[in-house]
Each structure stands twice: as C-alpha cells, then as structure tokens.
Image (cartoon, rainbow over all chains, first blue to last red; front, side, top):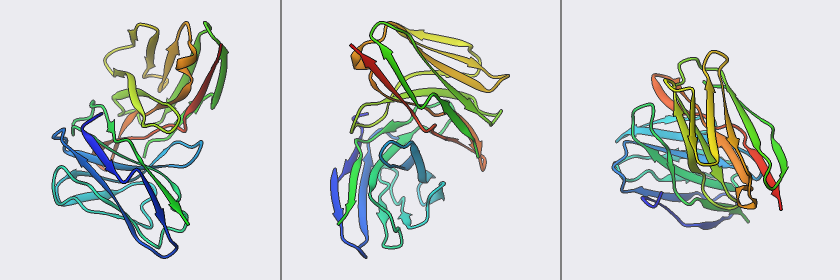
Length: 113
Length: 114
C-alpha cells in the first residue's frame, strides 16, 4: 500500500485544460494501472502498462493519455477531449504474473470548475 | 474481456449477522479471485484472495469460496461489526489480449447497523 504515491490529492481543472496526475511506486512492480471511479460506481480501467515504454488501452481510454518512461512512474494526462472528467482516479501496481495482488495509491480527486 | 457481475449491490444487516456477497465471472481462464474493501473516500485494500486450486479460504471472520465450474466466488463475513461497513469489490483476474488483467465488479455497499 504505502509504496504507491499519487499526487495531487485534489485537483481542479478549468474547461479546455489538460491536467496530469502523477503516480510513483517503489515496489519494483512491472505492471501499473489507472482506474477511474465515479460516485457510487465501480472501478473502470483507463490504461495499463506491463513494461517500460509500452502501455495498453483499457475500457475507457478516450480523452486520456499516459506514458511509461520509467518503471517507477506512470503519469496520467486528462485531456480537454475528456468531456466529463470529474471523478476519483486511482493508480495501482502489481507484479506481472497472474496471481498477484493489486496495490492502490491513495487516489486523486479531479473536479472541473 | 471479462464480464463480472456482483450481487447484491446493497446489503444491510444487523451487527452480529452474517453477510454474503457473490461474484460471477465469464472467463474460464481466470485463476485469481480477490476481494477488496473500500471505505468512504479511501483506496480499495485487499482483504482476502483465493487461487484456482483451492475451494475455500478463511481468515478469522472472513472467508472466500470458489466454484470454478459455475464461475462464481463469494465473500462471507460472519459476526459483522459496524467497522465492516464499506464497499466490497471482487476483481477476478482474466486473460485479455494475452495478459492477465483484473476486472472489478460494480461493488456491494455493506451497511452494518449497531
């Protein structure tokens, strides 16, 4: 748990702005994920990455972009193309093999103003 | 991708009662079955998991049972306490594009009344 750091915890975005959420892990995990959670809803996968310089779209990738230049870091950019970005964003990581637990960061609350 | 159904969506019990939440999945290749607990405004945290070679696992008041033939697994909480009130998610790990990716259920809101 404590090995994944997300920042900022709270972020306000104006219409038309891009914003970037930071995610850093020191667990030496190969896989990293970004999930979006809307109030009273489950977790929906935005993007995931299993190796440096490679990432895959999840179920709701439109309007988002990511990069994985370092194993420890997986930042998420919410672009102006994402029309309804207000949500709770969770970064997570895990080892690569199938039976491994996902660990989450503390989350970032994004609000459009 | 994996289709995951979780029932019920809301469960209200009296303190001391038992609670059972069921998760149904579609991918027969799924081989890892965890349950996460999320308290209000916080991150989900693993509370118990089971792998496909085991039918049941217990940890004090919490247990998980797996039926791979029927493709469902369940979370059992006995002697519920108010601090068990939270949202619970299942996240079976199925195969997607050659990778094992967890898919989360929509969550079950458990309310334990003192």
